Each structure stands twice: as C-alpha cells, then as structure tokens.
Image 1 (cartoon, one colour):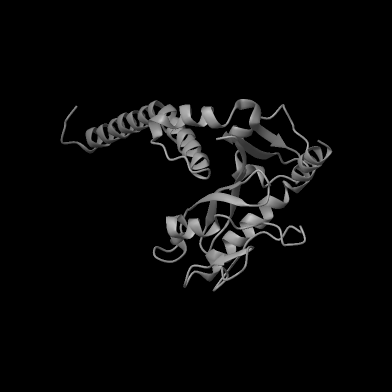
Image 2 (spheres, helix red, strand yellow; image 1 turned 90 degrees about the vertical axis):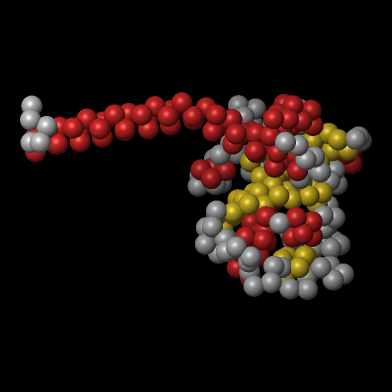
Length: 239
C-alpha cells in the first residue's frame, strides 16, 4: 500500500488508536488492585488517626487489626441492632446514604486502646462546592470526642479546605455531643463558638458554608447511632 495515500494514513491512525487504547486499558486493569489496596489502607490510616495512632501506609493494616478487632467492626441498623451479614469496613457511605434509612447500614468501628474503648463513626456530607467526609471518634462515654479527621473534594484552598488541617481538627477534641441535660445536640461550628461551650468550636474564618457543612455532617451522621448508644449504656447501667 502506498504510504503516502489517504487510505494508508487512515488505517495507520486506526491501528494506533486501537493499540494505545488497549495499552491504557491493560494498564488501568493492572493498576486497579494496587489502587484499591491504597484506598483501603488510607481508610485505615484515617480511622486510626482519630484515636491518636499515626502510621505510615505500609504499617496501616497491622495497626488497624491490632486496635480494631474484626468482631468490633459493626454494621448497625437504624434501630441500633447489629447486622452480621454486612461487612462494616466495606460499606461505601457514598452509595449507602442514598438508600432509604430503613435499608441503610451504619458502620461503627470500636477500638481497644490502653484499657479504653473508642467508637469511630464514618462521616459524609456537603461543603460549599462538593462532598466532604471524615471520621469522628468518641470516648467510651459515647459523648466526648477523642478526635476527628476530615477531607474534601473541592473546597477552596485557604478557606473551606482548611478542614483538613490539624489546627482545625484539634478544636473538636474533648468537646461533647450532648448538652448538660444529656440531650444530643452535636457540635456547633461558629465564630467564637469555643468560649465556655462544650458543644461548639470556632469556625474557619471566611468559610461559613463549609463550616456549617461540617456541623451538619456530624449531627446528621451521629443521630443514626443514638439507638445503639442507648442500648449499650443501658447494659452498662444494669451491670
């Protein structure tokens, strides 16, 4: 075939497209297991961080299994019962929250560390521009916050994106999700919120909507765990 002809050029272009597409597809398939493993270990790192355990990714799985035993990774119904047919770690919160609440399962990770228990709850909500998510750990009183981790998809650098920064996340430590009367109130995120208020923290300056998104996310997600907490507290009271 004449290499200068239009037909040759057209056929050559088609062949190159097929070859490149095949190579890209093969690369994507080959890398997916590694990508999935990285996502899995990053999730473990984030959950561990809420209880003050900082590890590098290669050590994440061993540390996670040390503090979060398999039997303490629970999938809860809205009534606070444990559904043993669902693997808590593999629940995809993005798709789970789209289901009717009766069909949702709520993952809970219970850590044992230095003689204390911590209850870690996954979070997902909306910021100014896109999704925000994270984890919150409660002390064994199921009221006091041990630690939090937040992340986002598209918040503004220097403003809403500051939810990922340590200085902001540390504001939640030792705050309470119940008021002095034992009523669930969550955590208010507001300007000057931390002054003498166990249920509030200071918002990020210039990021009102993202700050409110964090507040709403925590309250909405934690509400689904109250039935479980009440049942567990009743067991403690009986003992």
